[in-house]
Length: 204
Image (spheres, one colour):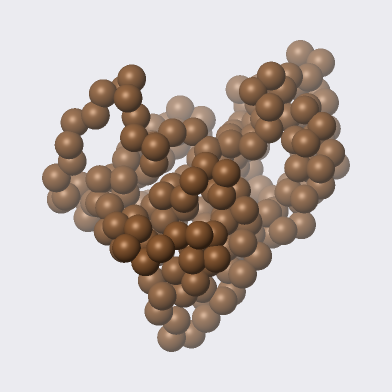
C-alpha cells in the first residue's frame, strides 16, 4: 500500500496535541520495547514495516509468513523485528492495542487481525473500537486495559515518532517493506524471494 503523506501528517498533528511525559531511554515502558520473533542469535535480522490496515501486508502475513516462520524463524535462521507503520487512524489504534498485550501474545494477535482484516477494518458500518476489542479479548485483554490502550495518546505519538524516524532512515515509501542487510525492499514478496534475500544476507 502506498503511503499517503496527508494521512500521516494528519495523524502526527492530532497526536502531537496530547501531553507526553519525558521518558528515559534506559527504562522504556513495556509498550515501547521491541516486538520480534526468532532467536536473538539468528545470523540474519529482518525488519518488517507494516500497517494493520494495509491489504498487501495482510496478504504477506497470511500467504507468506507461515512459511517464513516455519522454515526460517523457527529453525533459528532469521530474527524478524516488527515495526509499526500505520497508514491511518484505525491502524494506529490497533497498533496501540497490540503493544498493550504481553509480548508473547503480540505476534498471534497481529496475525489474527491480518487474517480477519475484512471483518474489522473494511466491513461497512463497522464500529472499529468494538470490532478490534473482540480480537483483543480473545488474546486475554480485559476491557479496562483495552480502553487504556485505545486512548493512550502518548503511545500513539511514540509510534508516529518511530515511524517518522524509520521512514527517513530506511527510505520506507510503501507497506509492507523489509530491511535486510541494510537494504530496503518493498512489497508483499513471495516466500522464495524472501528466502533468497535471507540466504544472500547470511553469506555476507
